[in-house]
Image (cartoon, rainbow, N blue to C red; front, side, top):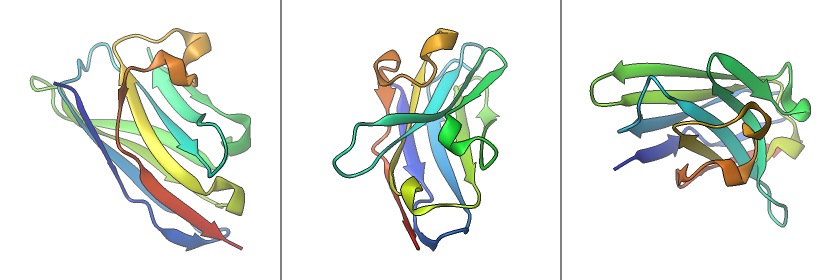
Length: 129
């Protein structure tokens, strides 16, 4: 069973930094497509950063400020951690951040909610001005 568990959310001041983590298990590291999404109160969930097949995609709102990366810890078990490093945070970056995964996602869908069947429970980020 695929498991995703986010952590690292916190309350920070504007222009601060945070690094989110998403521990995953039972994923094929040879066919790994993962992404970070966020959802602010009253708004739809939106894609922030995604990767797959050696390609990385960022939403325009976070380009130059956020960085996605992944680290494998146990290739046989399909375990590892997905990261989202966030710098120069703005109040508009506040929300619940989710990680998502699938074994294949087309390039045009890397930041689309409907493309991912596996999701974590989320971690909250609050950025105050």
